[in-house]
Length: 261
Image (cartoon, rainbow, N blue to C red):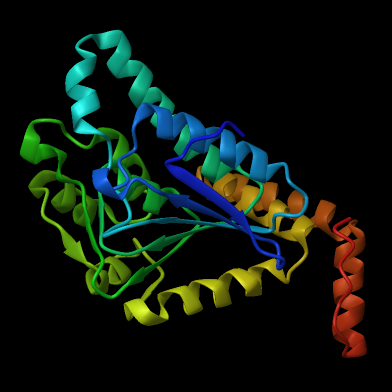
């Protein structure tokens, strides 16, 4: 992983790796450099056998304000714009296609590409005062790439209202429409995120990897094709040692000893 002082990566003994966006003076903006570093970090963590769950969060007053508008204004040509937005899309795809579950720990504002980042994570837990928005329409830059992630978590009409008005939504409504899983008082946020991360980390790495890949893949399939595909996945999963161990442990009323094989 390339060094970037604006991103802090830490590892917990429970198999939890943490990524902290650390540029509070710029509201943790997703600059091209930050995006490039995040892609590298996620690739590395997805290949790290010790990492079981990834948590991403922001420092300072909020999660992320999205793209760095000063950087965008300085680019000035189509090629550079395309490079930036394509790179951001690669980051979101890396999260979705990665082997490890990713939890967004959100406080304060998650706007534009920051909201896209939250929607791209497998799970999202926020503080009760968090706010979310796709406000590009307010500055003449429609949130086209953020809507890809948001529209895959939120229903069409609710997504359309967000992207057409640019209005922020609170944590209560974000949970109601499926953008986040839950919200808590800010003083409980860390505790609840770690509780969730540890629970997932206690499962078989292999089983989680198989399940995450199958979940996103089947979503894009017609019903019959999805069932055919997932039946094949479960058959292959059943051949793994961890499936046999898990079933035996359940029947024997003992804790499973995962081999991740």
